[in-house]
Each structure stands twice: as structure tokens, then as C-alpha cells.
Length: 467
Image 1 (cartoon, rainbow, N blue to C red):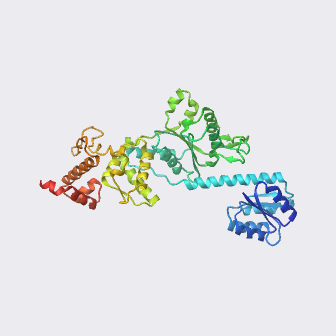
Image 2 (tube, rainbow, N blue to C red):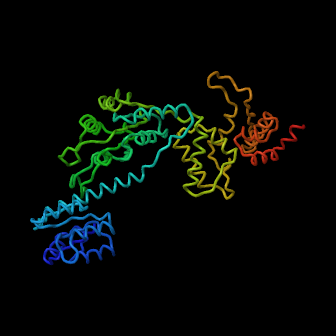
């Protein structure tokens, strides 16, 4: 932390430097013009300046610092008779002021407060940068119903509990609720309750005061403070220990909390959205989760479904993430139809998270050809290709009359040849169903016309028809 002391009194300037230099990196200037010159050369986190100085006074220095270094904090030193000037400086943008003669303990207190505020604003800024517009991707009825739920609950402050398997998009729903709310311009703060130990998670949630424990060299705001006016997302809430569950219950009931090592109550102004893959009812019965906390969290509940239960969203998700990841990584890559079919046929036990990770790996490892084909796919995905070609009606269980039954694989038959044979039969079927209309057949298969024409030549479809 670098501090610049500006005062035309040599004795005070040097005394302050001597007192502070054991803790901070300190430089001095005898007037405002010299200070401004130093600020143009290097960065200072805090400027401690006298109000009345020759050449350029404290108020003029403040005005110019706000132009050349707007993130620098400014503390004004003023004589007792110049309080009106100090108030004017605060109105002009100073962060604080202290009366002369300066008491060292009071100065340290004010510096600590400024440092704490800087840390708080830095974290808020980082969170704001990381919070991007969230999209619920899919065309299934489940996605439609999820969007309806988000719209209904976004405008109220009641707690929300999101249940469901890992990787299904619980945090995406939480962010969407926040972004649809009236307080969307405030912070969305996510905490993974399973990622930190019991001692650390309490400090992470509620913050700590200086000296609260070994290593706490300065006060730090917690996530509940950073989320003030916004939303705090408590992921994997089921992993919290029972003592911490009790403290969280108090926050939900009393709308206030204390920092670790502190005595002052801080009002909680954040909406709570919690999520877990656990069955909390069972955990309550086993004594692993407080029943009163469960009821307090479970005001508005929503259950996420596994990706394989809404398989119609898989092609949409593949298209979305493929385009998004290739653009972000600046990698030109495409999927062959066979590879895309295999990816769309896989059940993804890890849900959307697994799908996204698989696609990112394929894109990063794209061959020199720029095309990802079956050999590049994980073996568990290739092994499912062709198993979902023949479709059945979800309502009647009857097979589609136009469905294609894949041939039986025989031991010793190479997988790539087997899948190529399946692709040949499907392309041939589409060609026949459209009376050899290439445009319609290509559209039926989700291919562009050039790719479909390549398939015609590759599989000699014209010869098959005349045979």
C-alpha cells in the first residue's frame, strides 16, 4: 500500500512518514504541485494532504487527482477552524478528513477504514465484471416452465431452494432469477459451501475483523456484505456444518449478522438463493440438516431435471456451446455429421456441465483438418452412436413408421465402418422419403446442401436406387 503525504510543514510531514513507514510505503511532497508531479509518475493508493498550502492547496489537488488518478483515495488534514473547508472537500469527492493536530491512533483508524473500503469496492467491481447476462438454453417444456418460475419469483425477496443433480444448471437458474429482479444492477455473489473448511466458510460468508484469528491482518467484508442489495447464491447448502446452519438460520430470521471476531450487528440486505444435490428431507431425518433451516429455505422450491430427461435440448446446447467456445478460444472447428449424431445420442450423466466440458476438449484438440470426427470423440460417446436412431413415441410407446432400426453389430466389425454403414442407410432413407429432393433431404437431416451432395457421391445413392 503506497501513501503520499502532502504538507508544507516539514516537521509534521516527516513525523507522519516516520510513524507510517513501518506499515506502508510512504513518500512525501511539500506542496500540491510537487504531489501532482509524483502522482503523474507513479500510482498511490492513498493521498494524505493538508488543506491550506502554497501554490496548490488541498482542494485544488483533490480536483486534479480525481482527473488523473480517480481510484486514489484522498484524506484531508485540516485545522480545527477550517472544518467548513473539510466539509466542502468531502462534497468535492474526498474520502475522509482528520483534524490537526493529528492523533496517530486516529489516523491509523481512518487509514484502516479507507483500506477496508477499497478492498470492498474492488471485490464488488470484480463481481460485477464476472456477472454476465445468463441464458437458459433449450427448447424443451422443462425450459419453458423454468422460465415461467423465474419470472414469478424474481420480484419477491423470499428465499429460493433449487434442487437437482450436479451439473444441471442450478446456478444458471439462480443468476437468471437475479437478472430478472428489480435489484439486478446490484451484485450476484456465489459461494460454494462445499469448497471451504468450516473455519474458512464462516469468514467467507460473514467476514472478519482485524485480529479475529491468525492471519487476519486486516478487516474483510464477507459475501453477505458484498451482496448487499443483490443476491447471494449458496451452492451445495447441504454441506454446511450444523453450527454454521444455526448461524445462517439467524441471518434468515433476524436479517442481521456479525463478522467473525466482531460485536457490531450488520443488517443483511441480500436475497438468499440456495441449491443442493442432496435430498434435504432425508438429511433432516438423519440429523444432518436442521429442520427449521430447511423450512426457512424451502419457501420457493424448484427441482432441476437431468439432461437425459430433456434430451430434445441436447442438440440446441451442442450448437450453442460449440459456437460460443470456438468464438471465445478463436479456434476454427466444426463437427462432422457422424460426430454430431453421436454427441446428440449420448445421455451425459454429468448433465450440462459434462456436455460443455466434452465440447471444449474436442475444440481445443481439433485436428489439423479443422473437423472433429468420430475418432476424436470419447469412447463412451462413440459407443452410443446409432443406439437412438430408431425413435419411439413418448406418449404411446409405438415406433415411428419411418424410424430406422440400426443393423446388429458383429464381433470383429470395426466401429468406424459400422457407424459409416449406419450413416449410409440413414442418408439413403432420407433421400427416398423426399423423392430424391436434395434440398428437402438435406433439411431433413440438418445438413447443408453441399455436405449432402458429398454424402450422395460417397454412398453412391443413385446407384442404390437403380439397382
